[in-house]
Length: 264
Image 1 (cartoon, rainbow, N blue to C red):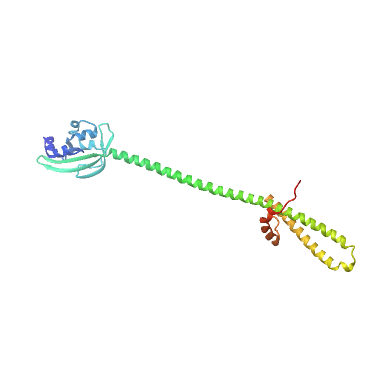
Image 2: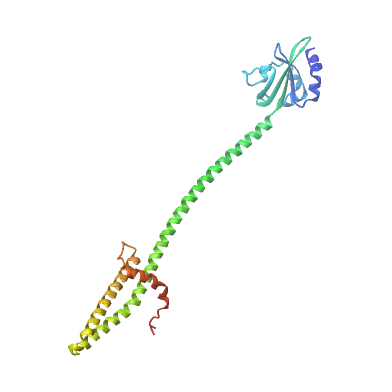
């Protein structure tokens, strides 16, 4: 009788809805009718649902689902004992034989599965992002180390080049300075045989040229010492005189143009 009344009252809902529909007697909380989709939802025969107490169908015993309203994420018990998650809408109707409640359940299992997949992908993406950040940090550290090594290599190359350059400059200066010193010694010997009245001004000039020659020799020695310090790359090395340092920078561009003695 109750099932007939339920079908008459909820007949349109039974026929047109794609949701699973359960009709419950509010007094006894037992299912008095259900549509075909209800059996499909719970994987059971519809007739087996008639007379079942609503509390046996719901896994969450602390939720009162007979009250009118909308319920999110309700877990119903399937015929295999596993939960079937649904959105539940409950509506009340009063009949001559009593008060009924219509429960329209919409399956959300596919949505929950999609949410789990999205969560898994989000977790994987977050992990990949963290790995990428670590890799980026490691790459940055490696780049800094490479830059520091390149600076060290460049410094060593510069020191070696400076050693070769200074050694070449010393070589080009040493030969004419030696020849000048030899010439001055010969001139001093020649002047020794001249009368005193003919030597006065020449002696003074010879002394001045000798002082300049010794000064050049001192600068050449400083260049040689700087060459050794640059080649060994140890310690501060000997500092060149200011005038020689200025001349050295100008001499670099002219060094290649200075002719050298043919070994043959």
